[in-house]
Length: 101
Length: 446
Image (cartoon, rainbow over all chains, first blue to last red; front, side, top):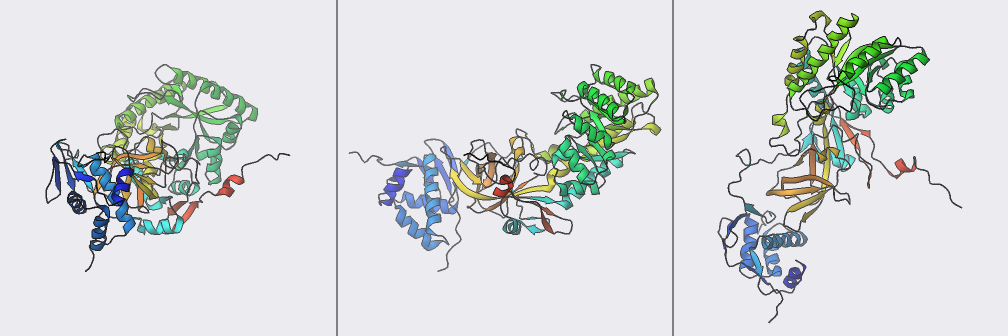
């Protein structure tokens, strides 16, 4: 988590939505690799889609602060909690965590 | 452009084939006020955490219990179980409703006297009665419920020395179909110990046997167990009459009625499975009335119900300190009230509720604030997302939590009573450093 946070802060979004995951517009998420399915609420769906589109933390934060009644610290707390959760559920994976090529 | 209302992003796993056990979506209960007073106002005025006792609920529940028994049995007397909640303000309400006092220590005996209870209306239970306690009880003409033979002989010796007669009953333990049998208290019915004790008491000139007492256990879900206990005491009652041509004054069925709290591991919630006062009253009254005892000689029925009378009247108001994700992704939160205040959380799944409608709920663990791993107030509770500072209410905490609360790590909070007129007042002050300084002695060293 800490590695991920620091990398996102450096504007290098290394998260990507796992290939086997499908996300519908009504918030239903299915992971064919694990067989698990999930419901995400509208803001969760929005976040997931923005992550899937490859936006970094700062861009997503700006978009959210512009759109919602929200302060930056609350967003930061909620964002990292959500990111940790979708990672736990194997909805995201790290592209090349060690950048070791 | 006007900004939109923000909901915390959430994701919940779908467990196919695992609907709620009632087959219905769970509607989140909200407790925003107690007896018409907002939870937020109470916390603002008296701090958090905060115990709140509702006088209105105490009186309503007591009236329900009284009605259930008095409609079925001609002579009923309740005795308030001090150990369940011995705050003076609480005891005084029960005494005002006509309850006697049931105490289990010299300390509780003194408390009952200081609350204005006449000594002859104190039932003195428990295995630990010192000689000084017995002297106090004899001098106050209390009903002493003898627990074991050593106490019986100490009582004979003490009453002889005082040249006073002690009014006594014996505690009887018996097989009422509830296991394990609470045989550590009193004299056993089945093996004849109880009958031997009765015979010894009847021979003692300084003792007057006036009753029989039993307490078959706690949180008893089967009212039929009380019927068995009542029948066995009725048998002893008649046996005493046959042998000594003597009628006792009372039979005391003790306490142990279940409250509406849900025991850990129970499949259904307690408020749907626990017998009502009517169920208990029907079982006990039927057993006594249909026993061999002639109607004109029916004993007074004493009841020492504690938990079922006070649990509903007690609330603990608390505030969220933090939200955390555990390493396996499970949600948890930390609140400012821990197991030091909620002793019953060790065996109940206590009801914890938000004070307003909140969004997405997921399975959570609620931890207390103590720096101890055992400080878990609720495990696996489906709870909405909350922010720090959110106020919550724990309900049904009136029984045992205040008397068994520990001073540990932090100060114990204020206890507030909402009286019948809807006015609030502190009935026990929050502890402070002075509370401890006043009773501690730090030896001076040169």
